[in-house]
Length: 206
Ligand SMILES: [Zn+2]
Image 1 (cartoon, rainbow, N blue to C red):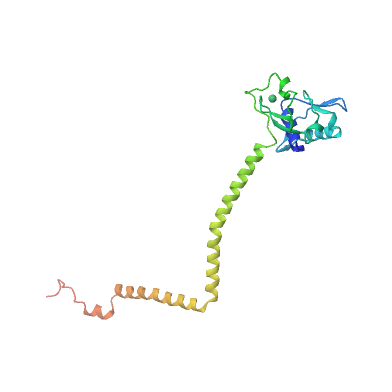
Image 2 (image 1 turned 90 degrees about the vertical axis):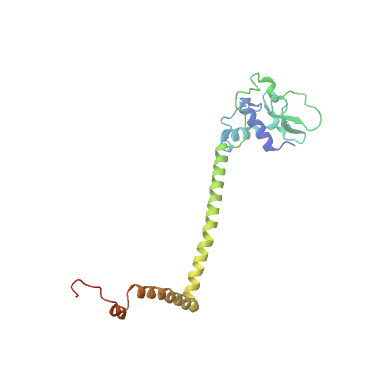
């Protein structure tokens, strides 16, 4: 069965090739432009769809025999045309007798022009990708930093509340200070050593 989404996409493709829908009930045609607004259908497209839905039995894509109402039944589905790869209504049972809408487009298929697309906005798609990448980079760096912060906070808290840790830290401080005193003793000779030092021979002696 061709869903509303499928039929809308089908029309959107052909609108992009300049093929309008004939609205027999109002004796007009409808060719919305632009078809898309970003990743969604444009207001012009939605207005056109609303016009079609007022009397779908009397609306046809130009060059086709199946009304939009018929396409929305279980009897029809939207497939790719074998000649041009554009979406094409196909009966679920039986063989299609009317040609693809491309039959009356002498300029189509045209390999040199960009193919009609569905409602995927590349700008939005890229934006989403960028956002996801930035998000995951942010997550990774937060994950790396957060545990370190946690550990540091936990240690500070434990230290502030643990008398044992304070005692150990103070002993460690004393131990660290001790060698410095010994080094200082080595550098500054004890007073008795100064006394014992033999006096240098002087030219004035003797
Ligand atoms: Zn075709």
